[in-house]
Image (cartoon, rainbow, N blue to C red; front, side):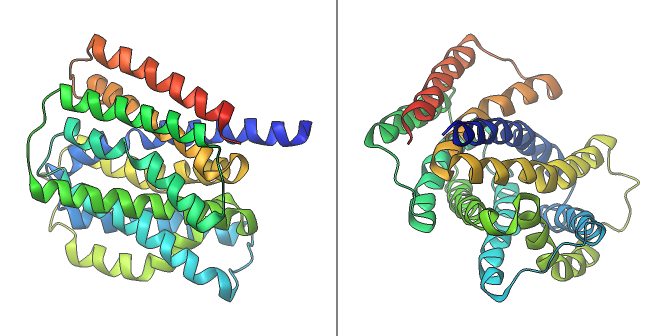
Length: 291
């Protein structure tokens, strides 16, 4: 029993690190799409991360996935390598970061649902109460900030979140047999031939007019958002349960706003801090009552 508790505690730590690293994704993406084509940003980050993943797999001489693991890996790739990065990049051309928080707020619930469908997890009913309250905190805060309306942006973000949550749940299930960092690595490698080809096609003629900020943003989403964060995230989901650890995503919008305030000099309000405390309490509730 002690070993199980330690494993779950480790899952929360790994999940938290993953969320912290993911939190810089939207601010970095927003900076990048101001100067880079969203398609190039998506395939470029996947190509860079894919090459790193290929090197890691070769260095550690990892076993190739078996036939039964290929289709789940394709689902992971469609969800987190292509789907969410591409659709969210296009969405951020139409909606504000405050608006996107509405959709990130429902990501934990969708991840939990897919975790139940794909992984057979069964949280207690009280888990859903804390999950819904936490989501309402996030959505309510975003609405209170004032949202711009863009049907195109809304549809793109909804599709992005659905694909992302499916990729999270499928990857967590696969991690139990394939390993945490191996899942995202093989998903990246499987998509690498297509990503490299598209990177060549959509690459800007010159990077001379691309700012340092945009280049650093591309580097961040390639190295951290697309590779390193997933190593911690999938490991955490496998250790503590997809539905349970997935609730840590409720913190992601606020970490993202904090980074946006620091990097983009956006104002951080008292309301944001108050809602963050409420969300943390909900995450604590899901941690206590999930199993």
